[in-house]
Length: 356
Ligand code: NAD
Ligand code: TYD
Image (cartoon, protein in one colour):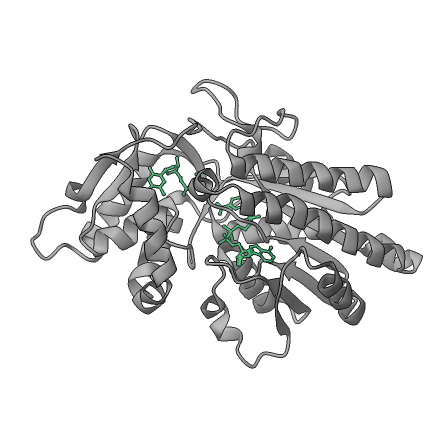
């Protein structure tokens, strides 16, 4: 038995692959294009492990995907592959359309052809699990109830619009062709192997380097945060017991303003790696020009997955963020290696235009 994971060299995908193989001997075929966000170093502990097969390629390469499906006969395909950073989607939306929409479409087509050719028992057992985001629902006002699965889609960034489109395609493949699909819409993740262009790892890395901690706008935007390994356990649970065609919201019941997040990271660093001059890391906070179209608040109502599938997160924000900061302190080599030339160019592009 095998599963095919796409995007398994990225942040969540690599955590998923590592957790999967820590709990099961079922083989993982890992298809990843290795964009700037894909990093095989995340999977270094699997070197020589025959249960993990890495394939360098694009989800939009129909011939490659068709060949992998026929050769390895997976019982499930889990689609993590995506362009995932909102700020990059504002500067350059095209890659988001190509991978998140066209790529997902091509992947669905290849999977549909494979699935149609399976015998009835294997067709019934097969699953296509699509990993999506809460950002498809748009922005909430302060007092509005959290997103349920019934909330209408109102994506506001090229990233969230491209993910929304992919969710619709997945849904349509179920309703039109009967493809056995499942979709998860999760809130902001944090944890090990998070690329330091996203809020939490960027703050840790910049703080330690003595650099500014750039807070967009007033820093009062709210996100729900979930430790990445809890997201992985939710995906495993949905794969195992989710009802076909259903979507499941996944969240940590942890709404925080961005400023609260930055203050928490600073306080943990003050404790675990105090600045040489004894001053608090908060001194490095710099308010910078806001993100265009910045969503004010995301909040997830994760009641359905709790009640129907018995899933709940095992980390609180306090335990998860401490583990995360500690992981970055213990893995400075990983950080140094991802701070490559292309990443530095992105930092220059994103932050040089913002006024402090
Ligand atoms: P990431 O950017 O860290 O990783 C994405 C991975 O996909 C990379 O390894 C990249 O090389 C690969 N990839 C990109 N284009 C590809 C293509 N055309 N073919 C094959 N591989 C390709 O992203 P992440 O944070 O790990 O997110 C994974 C998934 O989870 C995404 O679909 C994202 O929308 C979703 N999601 C992320 C979050 C979050 O907080 N990070 C929250 C909810 C949902
Ligand atoms: P991010 O990690 O990019 O995730 P997303 O946009 O998908 O929620 O950003 C999280 C929040 O942090 C978001 O409101 C934007 C904000 N932010 C900053 O204030 N400064 C930064 O340098 C970054 C990268 C994000």
